[in-house]
Length: 239
Image (cartoon, rainbow, N blue to C red):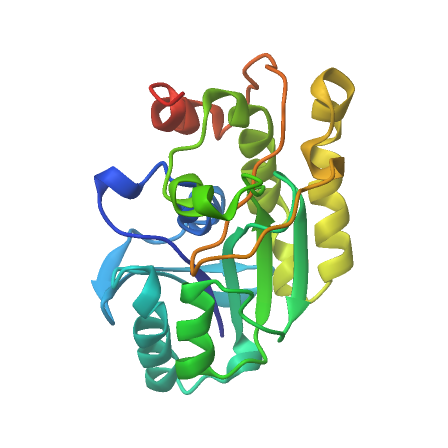
């Protein structure tokens, strides 16, 4: 069994935040693969299903980001899972918006959710870092991370989250390179219209215990697809 964790903060006021893109990825996977309804356990919301023939448990910790490891660690101990059985989706400041990188192990990069997971779960788990861009000024990091995605961000969030769900089988089977390539191709049409957000240079800045990033983007036509309706509700009132 694999445990796939999406990181974020619970509650309606946080649901559109860039910091909650891990929750959004988990929700997209659950919908696309017809997982069982979410239920509460381990101070988290859980959903069970199968991907590529593998039993998968999705988990969204409800402990708030800084204590994510408490929830995920409890689930791992209950199911007797190790770091190799864990995949984590979370926001990454020092990647351009829309760029995704998968790696095993590494540092926490100033991300408090990952710092907590490292302490409770070990470090050798797979990390799916979803770029949200850096605001360019460390004083603006907190507001950026804990701010809603803008309407223009739908140009890449919709196709990207669709692609995460569509290609979750590659991630489950361990083909991380193909997974990243498929996601890159999914947002390629954005680059032809407004510049690929994943290809832009991000101004680096020191993180302050959250994780975020932003680059200049032009408006694109609202995309269509299974995720469009849901994200229209999420981002419709965000500027």
